[in-house]
Image: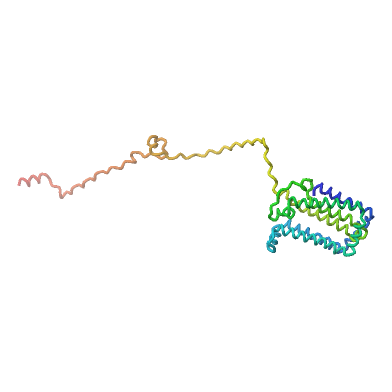
Length: 308
């Protein structure tokens, strides 16, 4: 809740406080006897059921979406919108059951006896509240009002009315203005004794709790996409950071081609073969075996044979 939201709440309470003073209802309003009546708690609990649904959907959107798809053919946002309408009827029925016929007649008599300034304050409060309420639907639609950004439906970022008046929760402020404005015209001794003004105060407090719950995971921070800022017309480009010097790594020299190796043998990476290693070893002639002494004949014997 923003400071402006609390300021509007305080202003909305002023006509109610003035009317309580005129009728001298201070003692009845401050009496806590209604807290001992279980019907009063049942009424407040019936009103709060709808906000319990809000809390469930806000904190467990995937479970609500799964239930919606299981039991209906509607999108979870549309299911939420239907349940919201049913919840409003439920709230009205809870108040009517609590007051009964006697309480409803007492509320009608109080409205008939309300002075003109009460009706003027009521009209101004209700008009301002419903203007904020309908403006919310017109600006962001059902998808924005019924947690579309949590239930898988895109919600555009809105800056138009009522988001440009400084209110953090314009719809909740509008509902509280409506509740307190109507309560101003329904004050009487009978309604105060029945605890109707206290019901209205508890109802307004529920919206304060809802606003606090939603601020924990506010759409302003995480869910809505903020508009991308346009770059300045004459914005200078930031200087590029100088690249860090890379550590020198030894480069392997490519193997030279045969032609270059022949011209420049010093650059060759492979060791050159020496001539000794390239030439084939010569074959030495095999020595003839020495003749055996039996086959050797002396030349003198050969000559003697010839002479004979």
